[in-house]
Length: 268
Length: 335
Image (cartoon, rainbow over all chains, first blue to last red; front, side, top):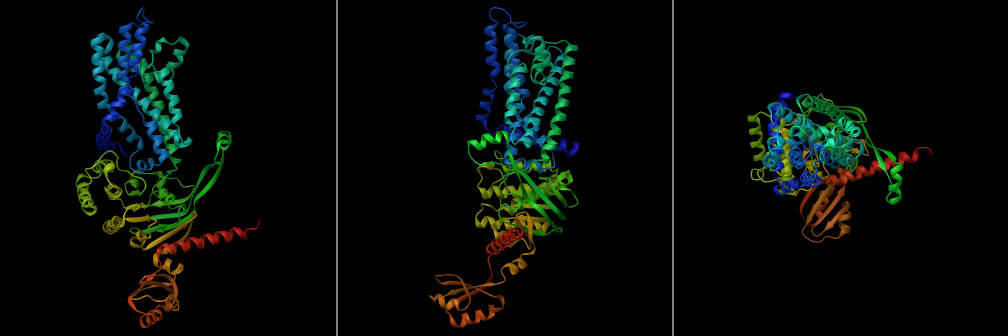
């Protein structure tokens, strides 16, 4: 589909996806509960930092960091890999492939359409963080920081979504790639800054993690939200993040295009 | 409009026997076999034609439709639909076609069908005025005005299928592939769907390929049939000629006012069924008139009709013929 047609179709796609995302209210509530891991981590690390700071993090820093992690997780999550696996296995991907628009836009729209509801969940947590630890540890303080934070959130979501597409597309080669997604999620929890700030890791390991995509999915937006970097460092990190967006994009689209050629459209 | 030449689609399928041992062995060593779903078929279809695509289960009908609609890449052969190569899935091609699968749905499960219609309007870039006209027409013809505002999951199968068909036609496709569109529907719903499909074909000149196990669908909709069996084309021509070739005999159906002994009926022709008040005889075409005269003069006949053999029987016989031919060919190959 050409760019003009896509721009005309996207608002309706987003509206319909939004209507789908709020169709089950109870499911939405359960989903919010399933993303509360950072709040558990916050309590644990606050207990560790009770008698003395851990690295540069005192109790207040941990509160700011993990409440920011909770908010960023709401804004950068994607689940296309599960959906692609399901649709490939059931053959229902066929219905998307019949339409004159890449299914990837459909998956993206399904994921993005949940944003408003997720902002509704994240916003009170951010306000709570400001109240508990002060604005300087909870939200960006300058216009440039806000700008880079928003770019980093977009980049974090893009890497997460494109990694989901790449792993989902592997199901077209391997029958199922759900276990690979689980491995990816384990690496994400360990390397992204979701369970603990990445600066706690030893120097050598940290260097490795800086070259992997996981930190740019979660850690970087959280660090920018909590004002952890000066401008040159922040710019360098955001540039690296977007290099990952481009690399992951090329990988995802390449795998998808090759994979679709192998689609067997089983089941009817 | 549609041309298919030497189409082959072979799948590589992993085979393993049941059981734990076989499961463990398959972790290290897998055996694959090649399944010839479609094995070199050719045909052409003119614009506006309605063609029935028939064959037993696993014959390759759905695979062919999926190749024609661009879902599957052929292993070999040349396929063109209105000048497009389907496997390239160009936007212009996808806007011209639609594949309706009775066992798959495009309607959004948790939302009313009206939302899927709206989504298709946006995706197919249908002008607003044309969309309104098409929707009004579809809602009227399919009588779905009360349904399109209810969540899809709350609709019955027949209601859902009517809405599914409406969703498929929002962009007025010029080529319509229908794969078992009436599966699971009751008789009256099947008739509604048939009438609607025929009207759509006549009004818009759309080309239509239909697969169905309900022979009534085929008889009502398709003057031409293509029969495929084990991936090979076994017949391409008119339905009438197919019946003539496979079962040239006619059926004489007699309604009788009193019980008649079977032996009296058998003297007129081959007795197919004999139930209370009704007897069905199978007779050669050139003997029909004589049989009718003898029946009217010698039996208490209250009503009489002459019919072709049921299409189901014709098809079964054709598939049996094909199977016998394949077996014969296999046996004649020197070891």
